Structure formats: C-alpha cells, structure tokens
Image (cartoon, rainbow over all chains, first blue to last red; front, side, top):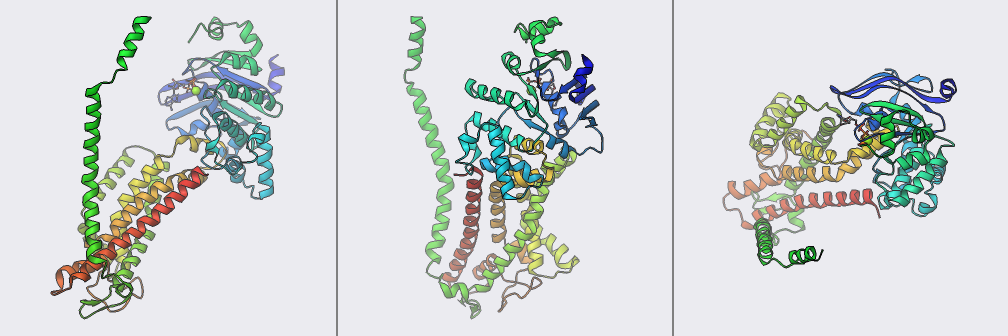
Length: 257
Length: 297
Ligand SMILES: Nc1ncnc2c1ncn2[C@@H]1O[C@H](COP(=O)(O)OP(=O)(O)OP(=O)(O)O)[C@@H](O)[C@H]1O
Ligand SMILES: [Mg+2]
C-alpha cells in the first residue's frame, strides 16, 4: 500500500522538525502529499497545522528565528536546499490565506499580479489568463462586467474566490489553503467547497480546516496533528469511521479540544 | 424571566448625569479645537489683510529697487523655489530609501532601535545647528561655497528625520497580509515593496514629507549660513550661486533696513505663506489621487 501511495506523491516530508526560537512547533513529521488529491490537515488550535503548511512553500522564511530541519521534497527536488529559488517554488506552490486578502487594486490587476511578476506583458495573454482563472474559481460570471472595479468592493466569499483565482493564475501544481472558509458564511463556504472538489482534477490541494464536516466532505486524505506531531494519517473515510488512535477518535467526534 | 425583563428596561432609562458628562466632554474638546484653530486663522487673516494690497503681478515678478524699499521680490521667490526643489531632490529618495531599509530589510534589533532613537533626536536639533553643520560640511569642507547646493543639502538634512519617521509609519501601516499574498505569488521582495507596499504607503509618505518641505521652505537660520544673500540684483545662474530666499528676505526687510514700508514686509510674508500653501495643496491632490487609485470607484 505504501508503495502505491508513494508513486503518486508530489510532496514528500521526512523527519521534519521546526523551531520558533527554542520552541519546537513541529516534531518528526513524516508524510506525503498525493497528486490530484485533497489532503486535509486537522487538529486543535496551536498544534502546528499552519506552520506545517507554510513549510511547504517556505513562507516560514519570512519569520525571523525559525529553524527548519529535515527533508521536504517537491517533485523529487529538496526545497530547503540552499540553491533552491524560493520565488520559483512559490510560483509552483500557490497559497490561499485564512482571511481573504485581495490587494487594494482592481479585480483584473489582482489576478494579473502574479503573471505580470513572472514576465507576462502582452495584454491579450493577460486578458486570457485573467478570464480563465476567474472561470476556474467560479467567479467570472459575477465579476466580468466590473473587472476594473476595486476588489475590495466584493463580498467576503467573492474576495476569497478572487484570491483563489489569483493563485490559479500562476498555474501552480499545488494549492495550499489555510482555513480558507473560516471567515465566510455557510453559503460562501459551500461554494468554495464545491470549487475545491472541481479543482482537484487539475491541482493538488492541501487544506487546513477546523471543520470536521468540511474535512470529511471534501478531502481524500487526512492528517491529524496534535502538539506538533502527526498522530494519525490516512484515507479520510477510514480516519473518520475507524480511527486507530483513541485521540483521533476523540477529536473527530468532537470530544476533544 | 419577567424579572430580568424589568432589569433590562430599567437599564434603558436615560441617565441624566451621564448625558451631562457627555456634553461636558464634547464642550471641552470643542474648546481645545478652537484654541488650535483660532490663532492659526488669526495669523493667516492678519497677514492676508495687511499684505494683500501689495501683492500684485509686478511685486511677484520684478527685481527689488531703491534699497529694496520698492519694486518686487522676484529673486527671493525664485531662490526659495530652487531651494525647495533641491531639498526635495536630496531628501525624498534618501529619506524614503532609509525608511524602506529600516522597515523592510533591516533585521529588527538593537541596531535599528538605536538608529530610530538617533533619527528622533535629530528631529529635535535646533535648525541653526543644522546651519552651522551645513556651513562646516558643505560650504567649507566640500567646497560648495555659499550656494544653492549647500543650502539645499543643509535643508535636506534638516527634514530627513521628519521624512524618515513619517515614511516608516506609512510603510508599517501597510498590512502584512498584502506582503504575504504578494510573496506567495512568487513576487520577489523588491517587487512586493515596489508594487504593493509603496503604492499603499505613498499617501502617508506624501503627507509627512510635505510637512517637512513646508518647514524647509520657511526656515531662516540654515539658509542664512549656507546660501542666502542679502541682496543680489540678478537671478542665480547655477547651483553654485548664492541666492536670495523668502524667509531671509523677510527677516532683512523687517529688521535690517530702516524706513522699510510695512506693505513690503507683509507682502513678502503673504507670498511666503502662499508658496508653502501651494505645496500643501499639491501634496493633498497627490494624496487624494493615490487614495482614489487604491480604493477605486
Ligand atoms: N511566529 C511565531 N513565533 C513563535 N511561535 C509561533 C509563531 N507562529 C506560531 N507559533 C506557535 O507555534 C505553534 C503552532 O502554531 P500554528 O499557527 O502552526 O498552529 P495552528 O495549528 O495553525 O493553529 P490554529 O488552528 O489556531 O490556526 C503554536 O504554539 C504557536 O503559538
Ligand atoms: Mg493556523
């Protein structure tokens, strides 16, 4: 079983330890992220889910005092190598944040931001990327007549889909999402969940969530974090129906944290 | 349950004492505001009333005549414009650059704290000390002589602390979530600063800088030591020339020339106010434009 799993792995993590100064936030993490699957990271607040997610596109580099040890490889390439181009990595591994954070620019400029930075100049090409990405994020119909209006005028749910479109415009292989629906109402949440199940055809998705229902509904695989460790990981179905660890069972049934 | 309803209703009853207190506080703040605004308006009004009859086209565009007791103040206006322009050219890039370095690049720690304290203290140094510094460094040591160049550099030093501090504030007030979003999209650090952080910070940077530049335009002591001439009958030909300047000219016509007509003094003061006012208006327009651009329709 482990062989079959590994053959489809797009990210492999081995013996990952991370420290904020002296505080160890991740302990001996071993896991793989599978291609074109949705992987959910669950666990109580402060257990290290966001920290782990941010190791995958090296966003923790921005925080001073962070030490990362261990191996994280993306498509066979070790991403903590000194000669790795972080900018190139982040173009391949996109990220959507907990709080929708569109730039205070137009809708169009938000989506075009990434492609522009990577050198797309031609207006026609940009137009096409913007339209495709907005369609992929299921936002096109709602905004196609107001592309030049400010993104800040959109509703929270629309803003979050815009952030997804903005990330998709880079044609990443992996999309990291840190509690992308926690600031949204149930309807907007539904739309994003539908969107995620659509997106997994073309993208690999890693999503942090506090909602057991969300994890159960949309993810294929789940990892349960506790105090910086992965306690249990595997098929989502199995995790939620017959977890092998008592702590997992307590958590997924809501008797915990 | 009925009981708790009662309590709720009772709490909604108007509290007279509280209302009076609110009114009192409102009164106090209104008074504070008036204490600030009224003197300002009085000063401006006074100068406008006494100076407006003097300020006409020939006053603005003619050379002084008859030992400055007649004619216009054209060379002083030109001199001040040159000085202000020079000050902007030297202080803005340096100040904003330093602020970017301090907020975005420097590792926050003892060194940056020390630099910040130094900058804050510099802002409190009396302007005549800057004049002396400019005299020593720019006029003599670097050999620029008493010149527009030396004067601009001195004024730039004078307002650098203001520009750095306000730019830092403006840059820091841009939410980190924008920086993260940009970096996560594969933008480099500099691209993030140039495309996301600075456009957001420019209104704040402009406000602070214009306050500084307004101050530079009105300073007398630094230019007295580094550039200003008592009287030159022609316009400066290069940055190495001496120049007349409005604040210094105002000082001279007010104190150094016996029998100077009132009208010339207040006319000069009004023009100086006007020059500063033009800068403020200009900055406000830029600020509003950027604000509109970033919030948009
Ligand atoms: N920048 C930081 N500096 C120091 N400690 C940090 C930092 N960020 C996170 N931590 C600590 O690391 C641990 C893991 O944090 P993390 O944000 O990864 O948790 P999380 O599982 O995402 O929690 P939540 O569900 O609340 O988002 C926490 O104990 C937190 O206090
Ligand atoms: Mg988190």
